[in-house]
Amino acid sequence: RLMFVIGAVTAALTIPFALALPRTAISHARAEKGEWRTLLRNRNFVRLLVVTFLAYGCIQGPMALFPILIRAQGGGLEVVSEMWLLMIALELPLIFFFGKAVAWAGPRGVIAIGLLASAVRWIVSGFVDDLTVVAAAQLLHGAAVFGLILGAPLYVDLSVPASLRSTAQGLLAMVGIAFGGMLSNLAAGTLIEFYGATAPARFGGIGIGVLALALPLLLPRIDPAAAVANEKNAAPSSGR
Image (cartoon, rainbow, N blue to C red; front, side):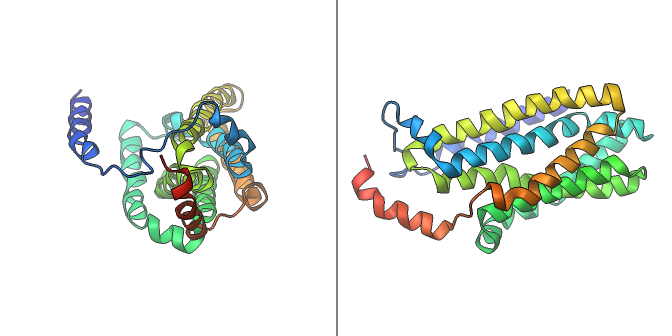
């Protein structure tokens, strides 16, 4: 029970930092009534919705039911907890260098890194019986977080007008994490019932690997510097 108390206290301690964040002209931008419909005509945004829906559809189920896979391979709760420590070991330094990664690979490249890392992780988890090797593959969780949870929202910010960013981010979470994750959990449970505990990892790993290879065809490249420059040029006429 102590972990819930620690989680609550930690969340409460972040409140002053959130309130101290500076307010900018962009943070005050508001969309006009009905303006959200223009998002449906935004090619980059719609394609990103499809990519995130498919991505979370492949990985959320295997992630949620990962303890079942470990138990089927002979591991217990202590093995799962140790693997979770490995999962966050690479996540922290990758987040620290996120800006440099974007400058090097671009937003689409960062998303591709996350998809490829997820593919390797779940393919190894699904097809390898050695828990030591499976544990090593969990290090790639950090790269998956780095690519999807950070890369996709950045792609949104660079693709839509400032006044529509909050709406676009909400749609991204709803379509990807919510709908994609819900269907992924349903599919993972069905796969376990009919094909065994390793089936979600196998199908999910292969699926997200195909998505990673197809990403250049599905998602246009965005130049962050050009997107920021265009926004600055448009600010005087659209700012409120």
